[in-house]
Image (tube, rainbow, N blue to C red):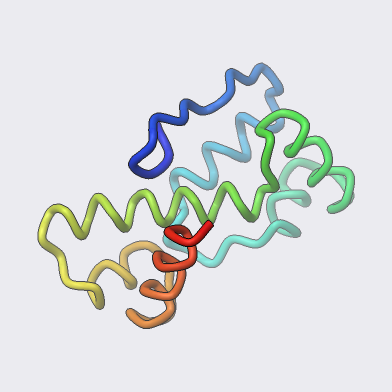
Length: 108
């Protein structure tokens, strides 16, 4: 699994808590997932969970979720779905919100 167009492999991880969180994100990325809900699912206080996730994945849980959604969005767009259909499939409120998010990734 890579993020976006660059070849950026995900870091190898052995932290079972983080693995479960990644599975949740990858399964439910189109649902309203919050860092708070991921932390609660893991049984940790939110700030501790963020630090633990970041130390394993080298990015925050929110950044990972956002990147995963955008990666899926690019796949749907390449497959010919409209921006509106894609936004709905990946959990964005509107096509314009998805468009802004995609533009921001190009400028970073």
